[in-house]
Length: 365
Image (cartoon, rainbow, N blue to C red; front, side, top):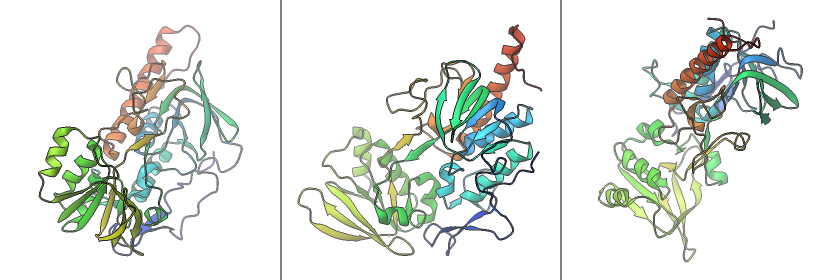
């Protein structure tokens, strides 16, 4: 067996200032070489393609599921995606994940969790999943033309923040632009910042950020809000929040960090600059469920719906993390979901083996 190499272990963030307000770039430490194509595979001929537990996704949920499944001798394969690590790879310093009193950079945290999964012989394939077939066991998934089979399947593909799609916004992500107030609000203590959005989530984030910021500007491109009346009343009643309706972000200003916004009036097109030091995007998240929508149930927002605990409506297919969670969206809750899904998969395999007379795969305790 090829000794696994942790693809994320050689990445760290260079902040140039120690916070998302300073410069940020992913750099590779000199003593770690990244193998093209993934750590345990590295070629178009993967080490193995069949497993008791196939995991799709490599954020906190998928990696935690891999740790638990591997320790149960279920020999998991993780289809990690071409950009493994999930949303935390775009996060600067993480200070709310248990066990790191001084905080930890997002890529470093994901690298450590992945290294832990690799320690127990998890196989990683750093390729995107093209399609799946959940019509019968073993469940099948294809990545770059190669078919992978699992007696059980854990879906942990997460959700992606919806961005404004501005070049300046993308360039300044992690340097004052964020999509998670809970993750990054602390870094903006006594600073003037803005939140973009018009729903309950945007208003919740604006209210939360008043704990840290000296002033919060709530920007919404329309005249009315989608948020509930009680949330609207709270926002207008908060002296630290200034509401700007009919207002669009035309450009995020700044080079090394955010220094302000160029705003456009949605009615007359006039523009003005607003000096500030942070921008939070709260216009929603998009669950990464494209490959599964024809197979599994989703809610009105497109998130996968577990039926009992982490189990989906298809026996042996389990759901974990932000692909089903639009309430909490935290690394620690996703990791907890990954743990639950792996334990549910292990028990399901044991129960299936105990009642089946067809020689199905059983989990080794």
